[in-house]
Amino acid sequence: MLKNAYENVNMQCIFSPTKAMNFLSPKLLPSSSKSSLKLIMITIVLFLYRNVAAVELPNNEKIPAVIVFGDSIVDPGNNNNIGTIVKCNFPPYGRDFVGKRPTGRFSNGRVPSDWIAESVGVKKILPAYLDSNLKIQDLLTGVSFASGGSGYDPLTPKIVELYGLGARRIGVVSLPAIGCVPSQRTLSGGIDRGCSETANQAASLFNSKLSAQIDAFNRRLPEARLVYLDIYNTLLSLIQNPTQYGFEVINRGCCGTGNVEVSILCTRYSPGTCNDSSKYIFWDSYHPSEKGYEVITSLVFDSQVHKFF
Image (cartoon, rainbow, N blue to C red; front, top):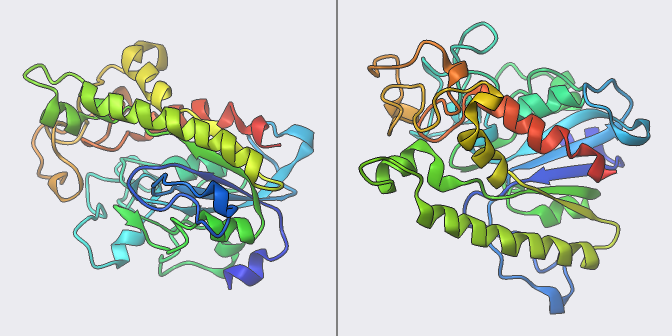
């Protein structure tokens, strides 16, 4: 059904690595260019067409549909219908979402896929593919196949596959400063819960190699344009200059103590949950708050969208 709905349109993809999975299949590259780089992707496919975008797109380009593959960062509720304990379809998740209800998004409100869909003028909310209320019209303007902890759809780690379907403009989101998320501060940040420098150094080293690989892929992949999107320094900027972006709390999440709570540990019974999540960069000990996502998406995607054209 999706193939029929989107056949013969020019696709753009944006994906980010968060765990070990295949980056690009050897089938895509010449035998001399096989890479040992392993990642899991958050892939956002944008279809070029005619619509009104919130951000100004070069050359009057318009985007009518957004398709997402990825993990919990962009999961709008697919995990609600999957046999896993990695769920968040219960309060206080979603307390600042439309209707103030939990949807399965790992945040208090909207997630990056929603913000991107709105910024390019498609729609304000990007639904889950496994949503029982999904309509054919939703497919025509976009859905998310993402799933917390992994990718619901097997295409998630197979950007080859997407290139073969016509994906040409591809944004690669770097690893974030993972040593600074609250859970890593708790586990490896010492008594003061500082950022884990070991984790950040590993992410930084990975990103330097990733950037070099992107340059190599740009030379090797016919007709493709890959853009490196730096979320590492973006998150660090929020953490180091919180008041500049309207934040007050940088080292713990809003839910519970904010030190370890995530998924089933973050419930309505978690003591200490904050009243105003907009002051927090993080919602739980791993995922940013809705405002955190909004600021990061604007800095990383909206300001770089011209590079895809």
